Length: 293
Image 1 (cartoon, rainbow, N blue to C red):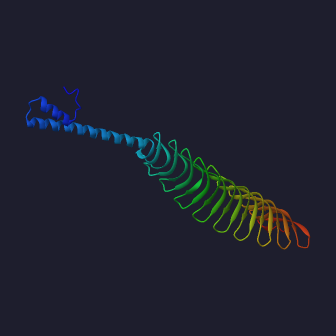
Image 2: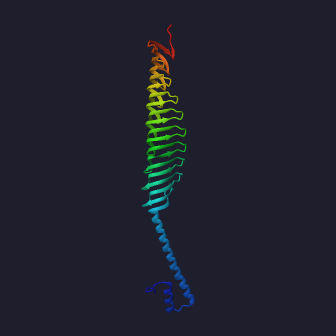
Image 3: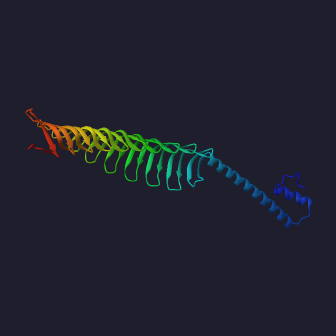
């Protein structure tokens, strides 16, 4: 019936006026019905357009969304993946702010751990890797190299108590060459293994005494020399931090003992050299000379 008409309320009203015998009430009702249908269709088209724009921004550009694991991300997207700068809050309370590539943490960023620790630096495929600063909730701080979420490479570790380590790390532990400064003034320079002084090194005491030699599991063990600030010196074997085995002790006044030791005491037989150059073979037990009867 209306095939050749432009179906607007005005056209319909004019057509019906000239071709039908409807009263004024009928015309009014018909006019309102057609007007409602047209307005509703326009509103639906408008909603559809807005929805399409929102979806496009979410997939490519800036937007905010909830991921399947419950985390909330706000930032840049590309092809439905996190790409560029963004912030992600995780369900366990952790949070990351930084760069993303292909939905992974990559580049510079800051990670706030749920236990209170904080890291700022390089990321590679969701792993802490490169260089950065890690602040522990305990008050300790590390600045340096990381590999696969662990301290690895050269770095400086600041302890809350004032101690400081500068040197190499391997798999999260002090391993390799380094220098450790103690709050009481002692300084160790040498090799480490699994967070302990191990291998060759030098330990300088706060009072000026100095040990140069071998360490095992933080303890002076092996060959070494102990140089005292008063001028005395011991060179020889060490066991568990003590003079033990063969060793030479030289006094500042020129006297010297060359013999065996136990628990840092002369024990066994040795040659004693006096200041005038004379020598004498003596026997000792627990530091005391054994006198022949």
